[in-house]
Image (cartoon, rainbow, N blue to C red; front, side, top):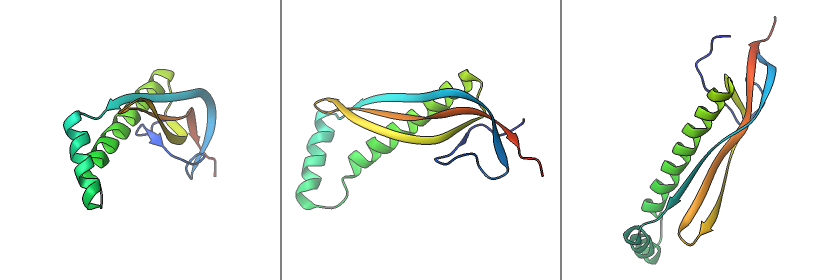
Length: 113
């Protein structure tokens, strides 16, 4: 089947497709830390309220990298899609977070009409 990989979705197969084979769990992980300067800037922003833009950017970049690594792992497994994609995160040590993007690597086929 020719698709533009990756089909990454938080649901079951997208409309018009069925699962041909489940290849297994796949994931992408990144571990990020905040710099001392970034932590101080974030602390200043909390004083005034509102969005903490430095941390928003850090979180967005980390999720993007985790998704890229998820795609690489899925490709290595021979997948053309990742279903039920999710994120998880946790603190590994002070000011250091692990961000994981994970899902199920599958081969899809078009549904017959």
